[in-house]
Amino acid sequence: MADAASTNSVTPSKRGGWNTEDWWAVAIAIVVLGGALIAVWVSRPDDVDQRIEAWATADANVDQLLAAGNVSKSERKAAETAVKDAQKKVAPNPLAAWMGKTSGWKDDPRLAFVDSKGRSTVVALLSLFTGMGCLFGLGAWFLGRRMDQFIPGFACLSLLAVLAQVLADHELIKHFGLEYALWALVVGLIISNTVGTPSFLMAAVSTEFYIKTGLVLLGAEVLFHRLLALGLPGVFVSWIVTPIVLISTFIFGQRVLKMSSPSLNMVISADMSVCGVSAAIATAAACKAKKEELSLAIGLSLSFTVIMMIVMPAVIRAIGMNSVLGGAWIGGTIDSTGAVAAAGGMLDNTALQVAATIKMIQNILIGVVAFGVAVYWV
Image (cartoon, rainbow, N blue to C red; front, side):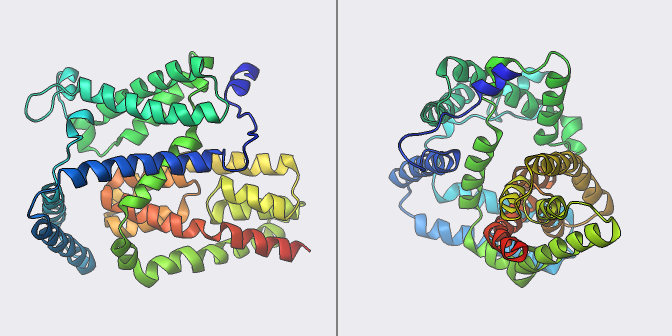
């Protein structure tokens, strides 16, 4: 364990505060978005304005259907498919041949690596992971990771990611809505609780690094009009409900549970009401909590996050809750930002966008909450 921990540690940078996972996550996302933008711009069609207008019209139809609330699942799916088709027609993707993904399959898992036109996607998958490996490898090198362990570790992680996606693409599994995030969790639990996580793999296990990069990319995908579509309900869930949960939880812990440590109570309250680990760390510093109290709060948060990440999508499906409301519930309830994205993805893309948007708005409160706690503690 000591070797694994040292392998995954970050050497303090002498170049300043920019050399952190946060900054590298943003930098990698900017490179990806910038490269995609340049490629699409160069290959844009002549009638791009008309295609954009058709895309906007199709997207507006989806918003109207969601606002109606009583739309059938087939109608919503047809409308979302129309949006995707219109989006693809806006500009052809010149990088599609180098960005592979797995396909659905039933009896032969090899069919997962064949696209709808019968072409193999193995080379495209390899090129995708090679490109991402180079970008993350560059960031890892600047962060002090050992490349002789990061490279094989990232390659192994890529294979495990493909395995999780292939399992999720099975016809029967897809029918029950058991998405890739669940299978990634299952595969990881099996490895860690049987053979154990290899030390070389730990060099590439930078969960927060990957999640932060993914969230920047996801944030670029969540268009501003989606944020406006949430309107006052979205802001209410994020900025009104969160302080209420924080204060009521703290009062409950002190007066009902009679917790002996107010600082532990406050860290747990902030952890579960805002965004998990990040809020816990910020609040622990504000209320001068002990290291053991912070560790306990984080442990509780991660334990319940794993449970809720799996249970909440299942409950939402069972009671027939629509994607917008389900995504808002997930975004405002699950602690960890990464788990919010994973749980939302278990439902559908709409739930993912709503959940991520709610959580992103909620995350803005980290500094406000920490400041408020510091003032209260003085």
